[in-house]
Length: 378
Image 1 (cartoon, rainbow, N blue to C red):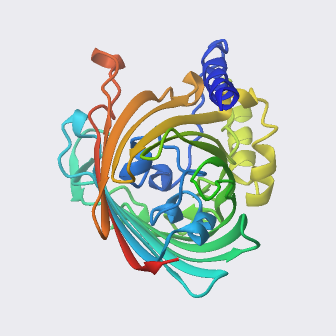
Image 2: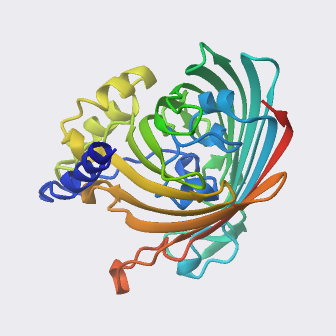
C-alpha cells in the first residue's frame, strides 16, 4: 500500500515541479459544465471518482462501477451552489443519477445534470444594455452496464446535451439558438477488493465523445465537446474490524487540442484559426496528443482519501491539480458522510486558497448530496 501512496504523491508533485515557462493556452470547449464534479462524495476527495468504491453516483464518473453496487437499485441527488465566492447567488449545478440491476450481469442507469447560469445582462460594444437572459444547460443520459466476470465490467452511455445560452436576435444582428448535441461514454472497471473490502480497483473512462455543438445556423462556427480520457485507481486497506481507508488517484486529459497561439499577423492567425475550427471530431481526439504542447501540462490530477468507520461515518480529503498553462486550478477539499438504514448523506467543502486577485473563485464551494440505497442486498 505504501508504494501506491508514494507513487500517487510523487506523480502529483512532479506535475507541479514542471517549469512554468509555457504560454497560458487554456483548452476551450463548449458545455464545460459536463466537467464539473457533480456529487459531494467525489467533491470531498479532490474530484477523484473513477475507481472509488461504487455507489449510485457512479454514472457521473465511471458507469461500469454500478455492476458492483451492493443494492439492486439506487438514486443519488446532489446540489452545488457555484461561484458563491464571486458574489453570485443564482448560479448552481443540480444533478441526479439512478440505476437498476436487471439480473446478475446487467444494469441499466440514467443521470441528469442541470446547470443554471443565473441572470446575465447583455450589452453591445459601447456598453448599452441589450437584454437580460437566464441561460441554462442540461444533459440527460441512458446507460447499460455488463459484468464480464466477478471482477470486471464494461459500460456504455448515450447522452443528450442542450445548451440554451442566448436565443434569438439580441441586437447584434446574429440570430442565436440553443445548442444541441449527442455524445457517448465508454468505461471499464476492475474490482480488486476481496470479501473483507481490501484491494486495488482501477478504471478507464472515455467520456463526452460526440459531434461539435453550435449556437447559430453557421455550420462553420461550432465548438468541441469536452471529450475526455480518464484513468483512475483506488486502494482500500482494512485497518481493523471497524475501520478502513481508501486512497484514490484520477488522471484526466481533455481530448481537445489547444487553439493556435496568436502570432500578431492577421493572415497567419486567421488561417490557423480556420484550420483549427475545421478539424474533424475524431481528428481532434488524435491531435490532442500531438498539438505541439507539453503533454504533461495537459493532465489534471485528483488525489483523494476516505476514512470509513463501521461503514457508517466517513471523513474525506483531497487535492486537485491543474497546470498553470491550462487554467491553474489547484485546491484542497474536505468532506464527510454518514449512512442511515436506507440512505447516505454527503457534504464537501472546497478549502479557500489565494488572496486578492489570486484567490480561487471556487473557494468555499459547498456540495450537498443524498444517496438512497433501494432494493435488496445483492
